[in-house]
Amino acid sequence: MVSTNERKARGWSLTLRLSVALAAGAFFVAVLLGFLGADRADSEAVRRDAQQDVQLAAALAARAAPLLDRGDLMRLSVLAAVARDQTGGRVLVLDRGGRVVLDTALMLGDRQLSLLTEQGFQRTTERADGVEVRETLAPVAFGGERIGEVRLQRDVARYALGFDFSWFGLVLLCSLSLVATAAIMGHHWSARVRSATDALIRLSAGEVGGVAGDAVEGELQDLGSALREMERGVQDGLQRVGDGYVAMALQLVGGLERARLVPPGHGERTAQLAGRLADRLQLLPADRSDLELACRLVDLGKAWVRPSILQKHSALTEIEQQSLQHHPVHAQQQLECVPALRRVARILRHQLERYDGNGSPDALRGDRIPLASRVLSIAASFDLLTTCAADRPLDWQSALQQMAAARGEVFDPWLLELFEEEIRREPPPADDARPVMIVPTGSLPWRHAEAEAAAVEPDDDGDVAVDELEVMLDERNPEDAS
Image (cartoon, rainbow, N blue to C red):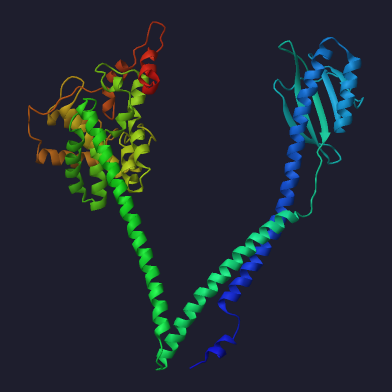
């Protein structure tokens, strides 16, 4: 057996090597931030100078306005000279026609320039000698009318600091403190692991005395058990949050049904129809569960649609149609905050997509639409046609015939064919007592030409008539009413 002293003499311990590596890394980071801090200080100084130029140009324009209005060039020259001496730059004053009235550099004279600003801005150019020049422009206004322009030109000063020792010292001190803390903790745990290793070596050599190793092993096992328990607790908490959110969403849908804002039982019937198609597709249990929940929450997003739209039995205007067609996005936004419901939220978001790519909200086409969303669209449309309609519910044969007319445009042809086979194999029972509700045309995932024509009724001027007063009253905060 190799003795402990011989093993220690082979090189530095793991804790010492880690401490040296971390200290070297901390020194490198401190040096890097020292240089970056110097560059940051330079940039901050340049930005501060630029802001001062903007303020100075604005103040100069305000003082020059009455002088320029009455043509007092003497006082205007004194004002420009003071600004030039203060900044060490060049001042130009232009009248309302763009003529140079005053140039402290005595170069432009009466040259004609173009007025460039109405609100003031700043730009940076480069002279032929490579020096950057910052030009600040400010309009000269008098009596609410722009009568000229002031331009302040100044070389961009660079405050080149080679190294920021304050940043270097602060970062190095913080980093070394963390390294010292890590070294102490590492030495503590390495001592325990080393004792456990020594105990295993002694046991392998047939020596007695592995009690310390058992204690360390128990500590490591306790740590692993605590982590596993924490993981189970987090998963259990997320599951409880998801279950509570689903229960609340189902209660919200139930409230909409009781208020007759959405068809009663539409979600449950859609889930049953989608389940029959899911059996044909042999979906995985997790996918089937998400599809079933999405079907039950198919009308969740309508809770964020104005009740006047949901209660309207006549044709919808274009704005009302768009508001109603946006309900899947509302449902997705409410569910995606819970990790366990994000797949359900994705199914609901794309329930109004069309197979030809003309749907909403993302205009997905063909197989780009999630499979569960295509199934949901077929099941929901069939239930709406057989229980709700603009005039009266259809029998299942007429509903299938109307959906077949939209094959390849609205619905997936293959899925629709499987659905027709399932319905014809086991037709839904005829029940005259089933709930019937007249719903807006936009509740269906597609609209016919005559429905689109009726949805927008132009007024005498050819514009779409929109009841803006109704929109304002419906969207008003209830607390404001009190």
